[in-house]
Length: 208
Image 1 (tube, rainbow, N blue to C red):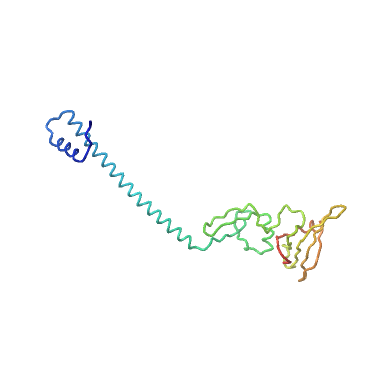
Image 2 (image 1 turned 135 degrees about the horizontal axis):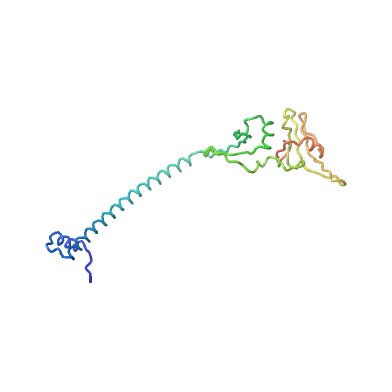
């Protein structure tokens, strides 16, 4: 039965090895085992120091993370900016050009968005909800149309509903036209749409 390696027993062995005069194989083994024990203890001590150092570093990282989170929480809500890209890859914020010009450009150029905090432009695959679908082939109820090429005329047409001819199915848009400073009930047919495919935006409520 082996004797537990208590501090007292270890001290006894160390005294024996330090004062030994008989260099028997057992005594040499004891000396080598004590040397290995010292090496392992030193390695464990170094490892413990490294763990303590890493704990301190981790604590510093958590403290810095808390500080950054507190700063972000104190910032105002991020602002989303919308822009469009031209053929050369230049980014132009929406509103940089006159509204009439921009209305035409946005029909064919992709829009991008970014937040002020991140400051990276990301392409928007879907057009804004208030832009008339490019696939539309006629006036759409709930949309107001303007003449983007000549905004100085102040022309608008709000489409309220679309009806069809009972015999040939030709469509007619019913709604309100704004012209010369006043609104009047008005209709537009398929010929009007083919001649002037105006830019439409979704609206709700009354005339606008």
